[in-house]
Each structure stands twice: as C-alpha cells, then as structure tokens.
Amino acid sequence: MEKSRPLWANPLQFVFACISYAVGLGNVWRFPYLCQMYGGGSFLVPYFVMLIVEGMPLLYLELAVGQRMRQGSVGAWKTISPYLGGVGLASVVVSFFLSMYYNIINAWAFWYLFHSFQDPLPWSVCPLNDNHTGYDEECEKASSTQYFWYRKTLNISPSIQDSGHVQWEPALCLVLAWLVVYLCILRGTQSTGKVVYFTALLPYCVLMIYLVRGLTLHGATNGIAYMFTPKLEQLANPKAWINAATQIFFSLGLGFGSLIAFASYNEPSNNCQKHAVIVSLINTSTSIFASIVTFSIYGFKATFNYESCLNKVILLLTNSFDLEDGFLTASNLEQVKGYLASTFPGKYSEVLPQMRNCSLQSELATAVQGTGLSFIVYTEAIKNMEVSQLWSVLYFFMLLMLGIGSMLGNTAAILTPLTDSKVISSHLPKEAISGLVCLVNCVIGLVFTMESGNYWFDIFNDYAATLSLLLIVLVETIAVCYVYGLRRFESDLEAMTGRGLNWYWKAMWAGMSPLLIVSLFVFYLSDYILTGTLQYQAWDAFQGQLVTKDYPPYALAVIGLLVASSTMCIPLVALGTFITRCLKRGDTPPAA
Image 1 (cartoon, rainbow, N blue to C red):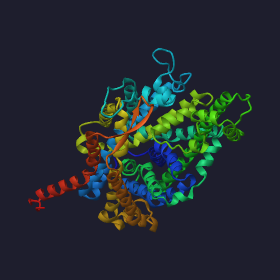
Image 2: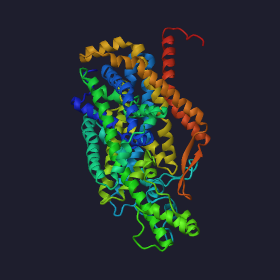
Image 3: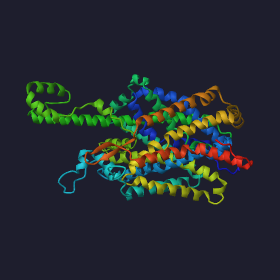
Image 4: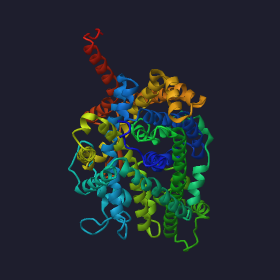
C-alpha cells in the first residue's frame, strides 16, 4: 500500500503546496489590522515570540505525523491510537465547514474582477435614483464603495431573519469558483503539484508590483510611518499577546488536517523539520511584506480623505466669510479659524456645526479587517488611483490566487482521508470523489449567496473553527507526546530522516505549546461566556451604516451546533471504539 501511494514530484512541490495553503487572505487582511490595533511595530514582538513557542513547533509536529504515518488525518491518528480516530474526523468536519464558506470569498473576488474592466469602475460613483434627479439615497448616506459591496454585490437584507432569495450573479460566481477548484484537484498531487507553483508565486509578484506603486502614492509614507512607529505600552496588553498567538495558529493552518495530508505524500526521508522552519518564516515574512503594502495604501487613502476634508472646510469658510480665493490654505487654516472665531463669534458659531474635524491620525487609526478591508477600504483607495482598472484587476487576481491556494489545502484535508478509505476508493474513482465533495460544498454554499448570506458567512467565519481547532491541536500534541510517546516518536523520526530532535522541539511539544493552547482555549471560552448574548453587525439601508443586533435563537443554535459537531467527534469516537472493543471481547462496558 505504501509503495502505491502518490508522491510529490519533488520536495519543492511540497514546500510550495504548504506555502500556498498557509499564505492566504489572513496575511493580507488580518495581520495588518492587528498591527494597526496593537501598537504597530511593537506587535511584532509578541508575534515573533508566539512563532517560536507555538507556530514552528506545532507546524513541524503535524508535518512529522503526516510523513511518518503516510495517511490522511483520520488514518494517521488511528494509527497512533484507535481511540484517537475522532481527532482526524474532527479535522475533516472543520475543513468541510471551512470549504463551505471560504470559497464564497473567491466568488466575490471573481465578481469584482469581472467588474474591474469597466470604465469608470462601478464602485467609484453613486448611481442615479429612479427619477434621475439625484444620486441614490442609500449610496449618498454611505459611500460608493460601501453601496457597491452591500447593495450591488450582496444585496444584503436588513437582518439575518430576512433570508431573501439566492442572488443568481454571486451564485454563478460561486459555481465558477468551485469549478476552478475541482480542475485543480482533479488528479490529486499530479494536478495540485503543478497549480501550487502559480498560487504560491503569483501573489508575491502582484504584491511586489503593488509595493512599488504604493510607495509612489501621495501620503504612502504616512501609512508606513504609522505602521513602524511602536506603541510600547501595548506590550503590557494581554490581548496583543493573545491575538498574536491566535494569528500564528490560524495563519499556518494548524489543526485542519491539510498539513498532515500534504506531508503524507512525501518520501519518508524528506527533511520535514527544515521545511517547517522555511514555511513558518516565509509565512511571517509575507505577513510583514503585505502589511507594508497595505499601510502604504492606508497612508494614501488617509491622506486623500484628510486633504479632501481640509478642502471642504476651506471652501466653507471662504464662501461663508467672503474670503479671497487662495487666501486660506491648509498651513494657515487653524490660525485663520481662531481669528474668525474671535472676530465674528456669532457667524462662526453658525458655520461651526457644518465643519468637520479633520485629523490625519484619526484617518490612519480607522482599523478595518476581513471583507471590509478587501472589498471596501482597498476599493476606496483603488478608485482614486490613476489607471484604476489595472490596479483593480491585479488586486482581485491576487485575492483569487491566495483564496484558491488555501482551498487546495482545505479540500486535500477532506479528500485524503476519503481516498485512503478502502471502502470508498474501491467503489469510486478519485475524480468522482473530488467531484462529489465539490458539488456538495457548492450546493450548501448557495446559502451564502442569499440576501442574508453575509450574516451566515460571519457566523461560520467566527465560530466554525476557533474553539474546535484549539481542542484538536491540543489533543494532537498530547497524543504524540504522552500517548504514542515522545521518545518513541523521536526514534521514528531519526530512523525515517536520519535526524533526531533537539531540546527545543521536545520542550515546546511536551510543555510550552500545550500550556499556551490551554490558555487560549480558556480565554476564548470565558470571552464567549462573558459576552452574554452574541451580536452581529447588520446593514441599515436607511442610515447607510452598520448597526448592532442580537442573534435570534435559531442562529445561536447553529453556532452551538457548529462548535459541538466537530469537538464532539473526539470523545464520541473514543467511546464508540471502547464499546466496540468490549463487545468484540464478549464483555459489556462497565456501568458509569
């Protein structure tokens, strides 16, 4: 069986597959947000500490398990102990949930990419109202980029209770996204191994082009200076350390089973320790690189908005006080405002409510992550660039490459245990199994194209994986160190690769990493409990902004089901195995 297992054509393919999977949208839209929230350059201190204590050791652990056991997540943990089959099953369930909603991001990227060829860009201006007497009221209250996202792309409902209908345009984009994924995974490592060269390398080419363009934009240095200016007081903030640990954990894709699946196609002698270090460092470097690009765009957008605000104030004061054109400038604005307030107090007090308080720091401090960053903030900046269509095409093409690269890993985590199963693979060819997985995911994913789909997307994004993955990786670490045995695993690795484990890996696996995961698990559990009623952000078309609402009871039930359906796999499979063994011996399980 071992000889017939497919293999990567060379170790480089494996490394590119891991990079393509690990380097994803989180590097582009979450890491910059965390830098912005937790002290700019000072956030790198807890991030690097967590990389050393948590990221690299756990990545190496999963790669080593996959390469040693030469099976997908279910088979690998069953080999370590029959009672641990639920760990692999939990990974498959979480990866299935992730695949269900993650590919809708690729569908949105396709939608924006197709619209990027229009001149002007459709999100650059507000559409006219039905009477053609002015601009659409919702768009005027919000902005053209928010309107295009919430109304034209999502056609979002006012609440999660208003489900609405499937939107056929995003639905077609979702079908296209799944078709692309299917073609990439059609022949397993043969096809995936070739695709990962593009999905891993092309985003770097686009980021490099964007870096050159970003650094030449007016105000880019303001954003980069904001990023690298450390706020050392944030080092005393526990949330900075917790978010650094969480970002490392999810950015590397630990616990999904994808890394175990990829490593299972390696030659047994492959140096997976070296590859774990390489992938970890490249992933971290990419996050920092993407942040520099993002903050240069931030700086341009913030400076543009700040100067637009100043120009509106200057125009208002010039017209209200009959000042000479060109007399009032940004440099003398505060001085003239003081003079007008003291000389014409009555008239100035009438004008004051119409004046906005313009602040570059406030613009730079506006933190946005996730879809809001990619589909609102970035598009806001792109529409103000010269040759905006070109930059829009490049950006959304990069998002597609990042998204598809991550999807290859997600689907591998599901497909590898299925194709490893003799029962399934003896009845269905690999292409049919891949097609069925994609079809089922695509059909269920149509939920996210409904008018309330974005609210369900947020539920899956926030709750489908967080607690489940922490528990999965905690059990994985305990299983290797204390069930299989750390010394036994060390001797296996030495026999397999010719290299033993040094004190660093053993100390992290046996002590530091599990303690850190337990701390994160307790934090998230207490945070959910202390939060009380869970809430979400709903779009109010009349106000043109997001409003906070409580989740209805059935949505809370779905959240509970998402968390329980994966985590309960671990104890239920262990219990089922115990009962089965007792029955085979002719015994009955002891009473509780």
